[in-house]
Image (cartoon, rainbow, N blue to C red; front, side, top):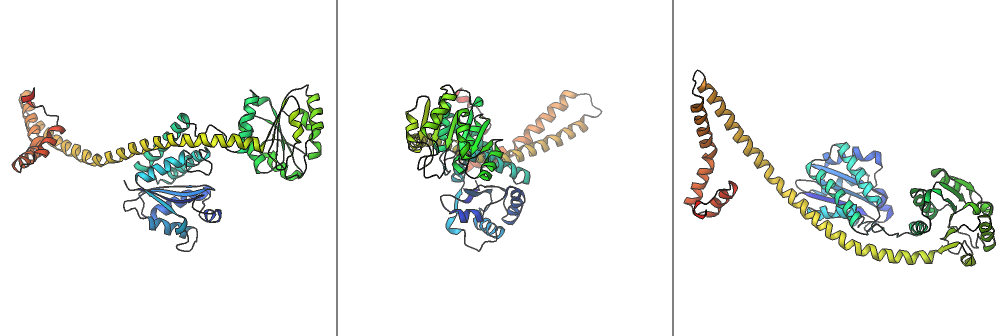
Length: 421
């Protein structure tokens, strides 16, 4: 098959090593052109994310060493420095690997969907570089197809496995129309940023970010056209909040029961969905006792996440079965390519004979009116020439006792045995 993959990821290399072999998007097209030439690869594509850098290639001799040398030279690394962290896959295992990557089975978070989009971008870069041909083109297309099928037919990505995503998932169970909601975020760290991304993707447009450091809040707010406030302004903003998600490093609660009671009074008892992701708590525990308040803590969400991870692990089994079937189909398609050249040569040879005999027949027919005779002679000569080599092959096989070869010819031409009619 001559397909191989080589790379490093979060399982085999620390972030310091992964960073040394990462590619910026603008580097990938020229890098592919350089790699194809340096390692004499027929086809090549590469993907580079924060968690992995991988090269997929079609190589006649499968020269892994040449690819590693190029990778080290490109990133100005000492020879051999990558060896302890690299993994490689060949042929059908390489096919299964890229399909598993696309389905999120090899990701830091099982089933995460972002990797499929990153693979599609890698495919686009390789097409732009002109380093894709028949085999990798087909492999990418089949990979995208199986990833879509796994997403559709299994629960691999259906359940939340991060606290931010779990919080957003729970909010969807309470509110039917997310586009009309107001969200208040307390804090501006990574978890809050992720929660904001998830809520924005669900249609929430009105957002407020409250943080002790105004500059950091503004950096996050600018991405979502949100408004920023100080922590002291939370009591004024809370009555307008349908969703509140908090994650700060405060040693004491920021949001107390009295503050929430006043907000509910102004809201005329409209419910507020609250998620406290902080440890220690940002929201007083007594807030959970209030009517019309749905309060969840990190412990609540971790229980949800644990159950969801079990569901994803079960879905992984089905996904692997689908990938195995798809890889076998791809392998069969690769084998079928071996007959393409023979078919082309066979057709070209017969067409050459046909053209020669047609020209000869036209010359012979000039000045003569017997069209039927000319056509019969043409058909006779074509038949003899077409059958010349197969006839000799059958005769030679029969004389040497090679019955299998004669049987194969019979199957090729779908000959009927008159004795069995």
